[in-house]
Length: 454
Image (cartoon, rainbow, N blue to C red):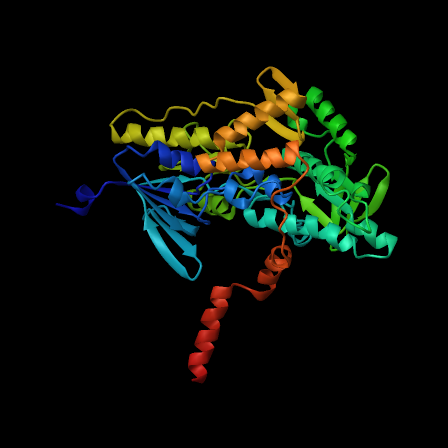
């Protein structure tokens, strides 16, 4: 008997975000062998990263281990690594993990590698204004935010105090609005009375964006309500303002009033997303077209043009102007899994992916959120209750739901923050690693040099 008749159909899924994880679960009873490759050992609930950054939730509550989630699914092999290349002729992926490289073959490939932060060609801004796409980002921002108040308390120069107590958030979409709102709550509600030499209520929180409205995709009515709530929280909203420079001690902007500099030690970037490097590489080897963000323009059934064995889903696909939100990833992951099961059953495939919009929502402060669900537009406390229910529903694991509720009670009913631990290493480790280089490569070089001298 040949190898092809002995083995089952091999499905390789790249990425364990919403798209990859839900595709994997949808194939749990299929007659396939799944290899799930992810750059981390956990599934990240990205919409709640800002709550890790502002001390409400711990990273473990929004990032459960992949192996624990899938421990009862017998047809999946979870592997750590980043896919660096795709051989579409041999149907083989090249994968890198810390200190090791390996290859994985596939019969069907689902690529759901998410999106990366876009600095619109100014990647050097990342050194001083971390994004909000990973646990590392959130922990670095937590250390910077809470560290800023600590260092402000040590200053004697009023200008230095103001610089440390000025927080700039770039991007007035959901993530930026949520970050600005939570920093304002920290300054005005959680931290007052805890410092001897500063008044946290004097902190400046500035929300900057080049567009002319906050939460622009939510419509004029909810955008106006969100703007009003931000003003009530004390957030300074600077719209139609273009960021042209970021350094260690401030940010340069161009506005209708001209060029300005904002002195600030703590900046965060929540504007713009781009497709990951794997998206560009997959487009190169398949000849698939991409949009301006680098996302692959897929066929209506989410397959890569000319390659029905490859699905690009979630944030990596450009299809019908669908937004890069969790629901698109979840539903496209399930669609890809359904197409695979139909193929294996000998049924007709190629059905168009049909997206059901379950709405968009964003919190502004405790007990206040905006939610756009079809023709229904809600704000305030009712919007916040819907936000709470939806996020609890999609948090993975009973334990995580219970602890999240407890921490929300501490933060929203009381004044505390359960996760205020921040370390020097969290604040500066990424910059140190960038300067030091890949530690595994350095060890190889040092070992090689040592053997030569020996």
